[in-house]
Length: 343
Image 1 (cartoon, one colour):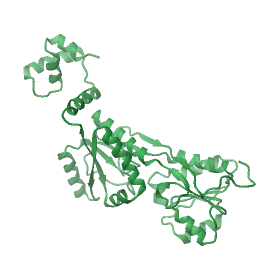
Image 2: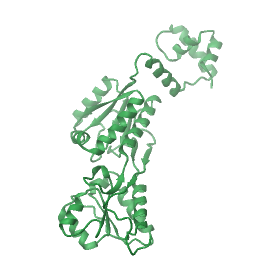
Image 3: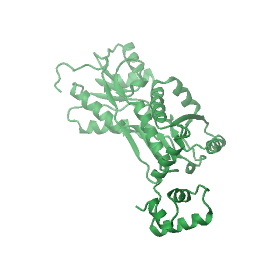
Image 4: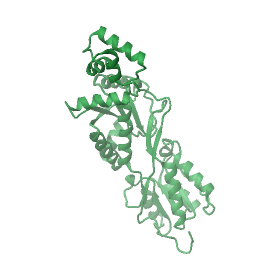
């Protein structure tokens, strides 16, 4: 690569002058800058965006340790979850910690789904010199085309946008449920049943369902139980599904299922096991998956800050998904092994 030192030698201007001219800081006379640019083009100089940005950040850090703000766009519903849900609290613990390490501060911006609100938000972000946008996991995909994404570097948690795809960080739901079913089988469970509300699977492109069915088809010992994913889960429709199919272990999000089972005379884990697909949503200390929200939050900040430093803005031509496997956590709702069955 052609260096600034080589251009300095070619033009007889100092390294500092060449650097100022290439960065177009306005501190070099125009005719001098023209000579430097002509020499740079002749030598085949290409600016390394990452190095240039890092050096700029180093210079700025001599003045201030804060490199900028990252905007978190939150709906009213998401704001309530962020302040009360253990999942969201842990998510932003991780995101905040990593952002502070890298010299950034998270700034929360509320919005509603109207074009007028989004256009106003778009102008606010731009006027405040926001470079990075963090899209948290919304309840469903949203149409946010009123925002000019070309102005910002963006990362999303789960698939939050309806029409475009940004670089995404999410739990590896598919691998996690396969690992879970494999361990449940080793403990002697043979009739696993998946029970969760439809919207919870739809928002992640049916990854729970896909992983469950893949394992079911692959396993040589598990019996097939119809997946139960109603639009609205209730005690009545759940108990009907359970009594009709009699799974020996249930995988789901809602720990209220345990209360419903016990009120109908079924014991957990003696009659049926329960395994939570997200322990941060469980009211009880059941067995389940830790989806590592703090790790997800930190990973999202890493990806976003790298885009900011590389000056990568807008909708990417190829959007990448970073998937993080969940951790199995033991709990009272799963037996260590089922007597009379070999793993």
